[in-house]
Image (tube, rainbow, N blue to C red; front, side, top):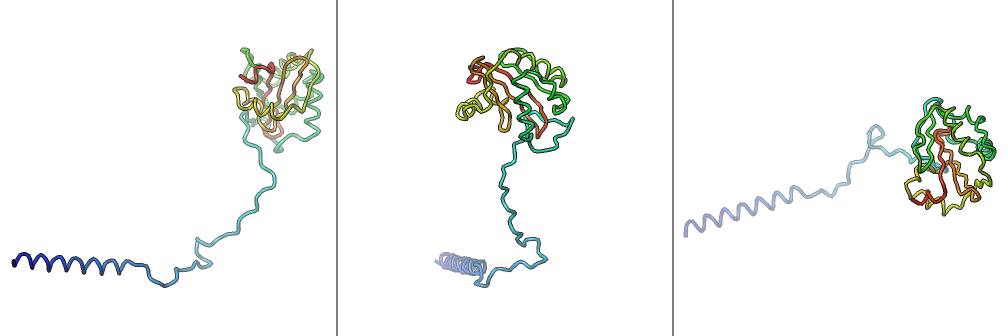
Length: 191
């Protein structure tokens, strides 16, 4: 019986110590400390949200020459449309990267090439094709972007479709510099 009363006394002592410990750990009712102007935790005003969404980094970056602007100007885009319609790619040389990736879907051609070689080969491919539409259906382009060749028609690229010839082409930019040229039959865009 003496052992039982000693254990009961020990249990009571442990219980009292636990309650005292819990009371000591309870948060006080005093307000939390505030940050001072010298504190690194002071809030800074939120920066305004930009009104224009920046273009994603190019899958075909260029450093020679480095882009001077975020995208080609409207006048440059109109010039590139005239290049496609005429198949005379020479006016693009001063706006192209030193190395231009040229891809013809469904062929072994070509990959990264010297700018002049890429432009000549693309011009040869463009030759004889007509009826270029530079405002293709947005839903169709969105569908194309979900397939393998979608990598060659990113947002901001110039896309042209010729229903008469059954082909499409695109000019891909890094900023305002031409970095890739792509050509395909329209049915290849859904593969």
